Every structure is written in structure tokens, then in C-alpha cells.
Image: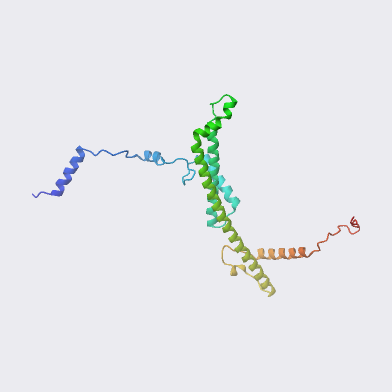
Length: 239
């Protein structure tokens, strides 16, 4: 029977590790799923600039309502405007949270520590001295978030202005083409000239705009002098 070197080596190594298990160097971390869930956010500090949202059910509802209200106020159109509007809403939520945290820091510094009104007046200074670094850190995060909001708002306004300008030009062209078709006794179909979903004009909408422009032209043509509402009443002479 031949001697198998590889098999003998493997058995010797296995026996060695069974008798002398290797000691772990430092913490090995949780092994169970429950332990992993408890420790997966050990490095999480405040969430002011992170991407992870830790909310209770009530906070999550408030967050969703806040973001929905801001997005609706901005009235975005298209995926890019929607993404910018959502970013602006979330950053505004972070600003509100910073203000709440700062207020809470000062409130904690005044709870049950002072009985004399003079000492209470000095409690905010004591809080600043004790938690000044954290308050300054909040101020730093606030400035970063405000700059982020300013950048996103500028980009959002640019996108919206470009979109509205393009739509205005397309609508003016659709009105002119509709008037041309009407002068030739033809029926105008705006979808043939503007197939893009960004410029959806109905014939009824164009007709309403044409009628509105005509009424505005008539209004502009009216004399600028005041009309006497009662023909039988003479206007008083100027003094």
C-alpha cells in the first residue's frame, strides 16, 4: 500500500487545529442574524448628512407628508425636476431637524439645574461651554445643507425655465399653424407637428388661446380715457 503524502498532511493539520484552535485576534463581530441587525448601524451618529433614514412610524409619516408638500409646491415635471424637488424636500427636513436638535441641547441644559432666575439666565452660556463643539458641528452641517438646497434650487429653476420657454415657443407656433390652416379652410391637427409628449396641445386649447388673444387685442385697442358710465351725468370740470 503506497503512502499518500497529501492525505497524511491534511490529517496532521486537521489534528493540530483540533487540539490547538487558533485564538481570534480582536472582536470577531456578531455571528447570529439578530446580533448582526443590532450592530449593523454601530457607526451611525446623527443622520444629518447620511442616506439612511431611521424613523418611527409617526416620524416616517411626518417625513413623507413634508416631502410631498414641498414637491407639490415646486410642481416638478419630468424625472430630473422630480429628483431635484425630492432632494430639496429632504434637505429642508434635515434643516428642521438641526434646529430641533439645537433647541433640545439648550433645553436639556436648563432642566432641573437652576432654581434662581439669575442662574437660569446663565444656563445657556453653560450649555454653550459644555456642548459648544456639538453646536458648532450642527452649524457646519446646516451650512452644507443650505448650500445643497441653493444648488438644487438653482438647477431646478434653470430646468423649469428652459422647459417653460420651449413650451411657450411650441405653443406660439401651434397657434400660428392653426390660424394658417383655418385661413385655408383646413382642419389643424397639432399632434402631427408636435409629437413629443412634452408638448401636448389639443385643438380646443389652441382655439381658446386664439380667442383670448383676440379679446386682449380688443381690450388694448380701447381708448385710455375714462368713460362716463352714465351718459346723462356730466363729468365735473377740472379744478
